[in-house]
Amino acid sequence: MSKIKDDTSSIWTSLAKKGVSRRDFIKFCSTMAATLALPSSFVPRIVEALEKKQRPYAVWLEFQDCAGDSESMLRATKPTIAEVVLDVISLEYHETIMAGSGKSAEKALQDVVKNQKGKYIAIVEGAIPTKDGGIYCTIGGKTALDIAKEVCGNAAMSLAVGSCASWGGIASAKPNPTGAVGVGAAVPGITYVNLPGCPMNVENVTATVVHYLTFGSLPALDGEHRPLFAHGKIIHNNCERRAHFDAGQFVRKWGDEGHRLGWCLYEMGCKGPEAHFNCPTIRWNGGTSWPVQAGHPCFACASTNNWDAFGPIYSRLENVPGAGYQTTADKIGATVAAVAAAGVAAHAVIRAAKGTPHKEEKE
Image (tube, rainbow, N blue to C red; front, side, top):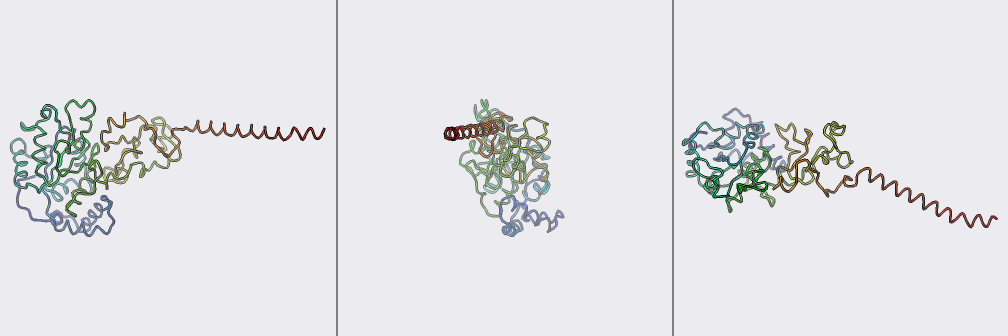
């Protein structure tokens, strides 16, 4: 992240200079198409765009956060963090990983805001406090609220990465003492995309940038400003444990036989039936795994107000259609037994009714 210079090289040219092969470049474009839920016929268009488009300037702001989204970015594999920072975007400011500090760091931020007005991408991590004028988070003598208004207000688009930046996250959980909100609420009227998750998945961030470079527009968004390619389907539909849910096979205690066999985590508090995210398909750590595969229930980290709306992490969702968990196996068995008993009794009554006159006739 050096001083801004006039770099006219394209993304592909920059990658090639770093030794990235044409084959790997095409694979990267194919991965982006798959992440964006686009058919393979769009791969040539993505290739063409990245061959011609210059790397967009970007700045990364951190406010009320735990740096978890920065940690997630540092573990990017498709592409790697080096490729993201140096070749896909020109990241000029990120207070956690940049070499500069103090006034020199703030100058790097201001250089982008002033010299690239309306052209750069603002990436925001962490919630923005609004109570008492936003004094609960300040950087360089400025409140996070004022910084967001200036930086996001002059950006081509803003990416709210992680749940805290998207809607306030855990910082906004009741009673929300600092008045924490997401980027869209803090700076109304800006062009922005929410990329929630605790933390966000960096492949969704890269895919959003690639979509913007390829089509010159934001990807299709849902009512929460989340991209549909990442949040258009519920986790439940793509979960590898779904068959166990349908079969009524649930983990009921940590470490029990069902847990060891990979059964459904619904009764342990999994919010997958109501959470929208592409975790099961994109996964984490280079596509290695994701929480449910690892044996922990989903707690809807990418859902708005999940801390308040979904209750405690290990509390079970109610009224979820699809399996007999509200009518337990015992209740189902009792009902079947009752129906069977009623049938036997009815049959006996009918036989008795038919048998009485037959006996009288015989006598």
